[in-house]
Image (tube, rainbow over all chains, first blue to last red; front, side, top):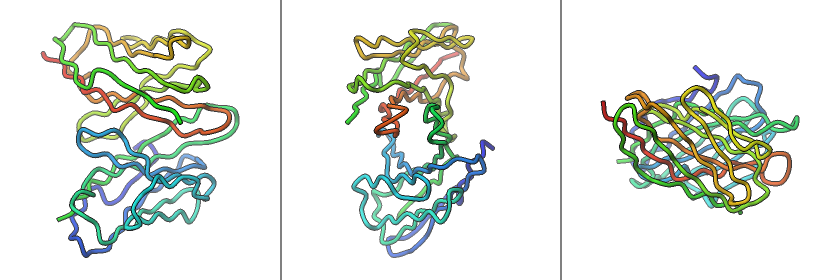
Length: 115
Length: 114
């Protein structure tokens, strides 16, 4: 384990369901990210939290709702999804500040299938 | 904002051959360029990176070169092995100020045939 843990690893849900993805990091990082990875598409940044404050919302539909209760935990709440939302959702974390480079550490991802 | 172009999208080589993946970036203020490797079904992992004050960096069979003037950087893998088969992503970041969020390339699927 790299220190970024995502659960569940696989999720199948109907379009009317409500579910949540969870991400936890034990690296002492202060920034957390949600990325969407679809087949044959680049990594799409969805949300960024810097010191628990959301700093980026990359025009993501409101059916995706992030929550960052503290700098170690990040959630992605899902409701009324569409089949095209089926993808691998990757969480990442990094340590900002201190003059160093912003190196992202990724979780293993949550594979979401929307029926 | 930053724009990163990555080529080729797919690269097929024979075991033992070299592989080169190229990326270009648009923001001259970008100063940090990591490369990530994502094996099938696994997470992207940092394999090598380079800062803008360095022109080349090498780690065993992999090396990265940077041309700041032309705004392009490349990943070189020598003596490829089947376990090098993966998707490789380049990224550009302006560390130390402004936007700190990496801009990723679209990825290159490298296939190494035994």
